[in-house]
Image (cartoon, rainbow, N blue to C red; front, top):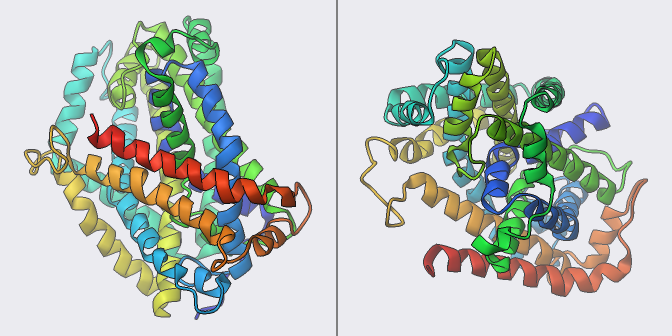
Length: 458
């Protein structure tokens, strides 16, 4: 097997691990989920779930990677008890990486397409929401436009990974993440100058009990919990791979808290950009997924210098999506290198073709295959793939990580604690054993059950 590379600095690990977590789940999904479920109350519940469940799960994934110095391909075999067969679940998690990329690559292409449209002035001036919706529909109806955009982002992502960890992933992702934070801060400052800033922030950060009138407590809790799992990308080893490249100078609870804080800052500031813009131009903030591609496009077209602000916003979206794309591609490549004892270049070439092929159903699901509804109703292939990864593989992967460090045939909780508490920083107390053994698995199981009830139980 090729010699494993290492990060050149701790900042490189932090920014890249955070970049894996920071993606469309933060800057696309989080704001419209907040809008749908009543604003501030949802945000508070979400933050609670991150602290109680997201951070502990993240420490497990990091510990498995750092202790074994292997990806999903070999890590569980190395750590589990002799004769155990728990490692067989790794194939479900590996498949999850491909399912995620089968639609994430397409949506990342949308971001690039809209970034170019914004900077070239194609948003127009004083564009109505109906006109923005028609433009979005026109893009979806054109497989050639989407294919070219997807091909561009996939080529860029794999091209960066092909150069290696330090020369490619770290060298490119570090400045890209710094630019992402600068863009985010710049856009947030610009948003604070909008006339609807105070109203938007009030909606976003002031608890409103009326949200329970349109949604049940169970529904809000389930949505917040699912978002906490989704935003950290726990369950497919995407962050585990970067722990295999990291040193042991800091405890993993400290690392997990830092990653979660960076991830949460991006999510919260994204809302600080979006909601004031909505209230400034009389747009409802609960528009669902269309909030980015329809609502905000109309908002930017009404702003002075909207071409610039819209372009910068979608550039920020491109960076956010590309950071996750690179992280998951690196995970896939590292897995292939370990499983098949092959070179990085060959792993890149093979998986470049695989990703392009498996992305086609999602891409064609909006045009050529638009009459195919794999989950019934008006569903498309993106809905199916999102259901498979978000409601199945991610929570099942998270459940597996918990069981792996708590059941007798797994790694052992003492082994996990020893690795997690190595280095300077926050420590996980031994009395958490019961919490990991009984509370975390039950919570994840309830989340999975609720996902199925929501999808099929009416």
